[in-house]
Length: 313
Length: 235
Image (cartoon, rainbow over all chains, first blue to last red; front, side, top):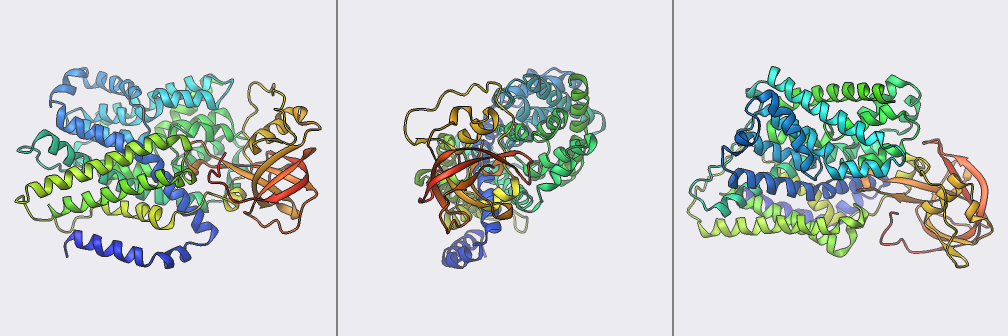
């Protein structure tokens, strides 16, 4: 059967079974699950749309040699330059994944594109301002977040230059746009990126919503007193909750029983490694890449932010 | 070719679902109210790309008619949230989430110099404003005033009754509750998750939240009336 027909049958069945479905989802747990699941997806969609329109525009309108000319020739210098450039993309992590994918396809050295991928959602002005607002009277948190996030992103970029292998990266096979008009090539690239990024986002939202309604929150209180456990607990919480980087500062601010350092870890890890981001990285770069990249990023982000916290507080 | 058409239709449905929840106003159950312009742009962009894509496919129907059979296409996964929004449209988070997360007023604001309450008897306050004035300012500005609060009922430990509101900063995944203990003239039949408007005075009593160990302030209730759940459930 062709996929359009499968889609039509699926939609008819879903509409007919609507009553059954609503009854089945009537318990408080399942209702809360559905609400959280939908809210993660809806909240991320504007940024997915922004990121994929941008990535499609890069793929179609930016000439192939542009980024290699704009970035320093030396890859070791290109990494921090790309990391800093992340500060100009005013979105959250859902926007930076497709853009980083487009950068790699346009010939940017993967180490630099990955530094951009990690820094963009963490150090852009919108995130800096929301962090400042969420931590009144503690501007050092803004500086710490900026410094630790940028440092972790650059370290990861350099690590990739040294240890990364290009065959870990799956280059999504974009159709050849030659022969179509620029506009149709753009539409087709945007459609591809939107449905792929969106689909993987749905997987991540599924996992995050499940943990959101099942993990007992009392666990957090139990570990808040212990300096080592509290850092690991908030790092794990950042991965699990998958909150948008523009909102995570408010959640960190409300975790008052935790030390500033462990809350900094939460703010640095969250935009770099979380469940929905992991799913989207699998979609953009392949499983072999994500399985190596995400755990390493997690470790680097935790170490860098603990070091920053030790220096500052 | 066919796969492109399917993707276009899925994208059209997802964009349509976003526009529908935004236009009907149910989106405030899931994300912050101020996101509406972004949602129009996102939903509109998806619909536009989908329609342009379909037009392009029909205009040159001679293209390669094969599907890259077998390989999993992530686009299908977008059907899950799309159908959930269109068919289920679940309500805003309520008592279940309140009991999981515990009261979360956060840190005291840098400036605890709360201005006097507005005129009015009773004066309407948000649950958050009442709780902040009670916990961070010892109820100084609340003394002897009749205040009116609205929220939903949450059953606390040892038969205590709380009035709660959820706060969100971005979306329901970051929702945190603020609770206020009810004492005084409480009517019978305060069913959990039902919405009430209470009028009462400041009460210096406090509880410690079981989950978050934060202070929960109290109000001495003079009257409590059931109300319909508001469209905008979050504060």
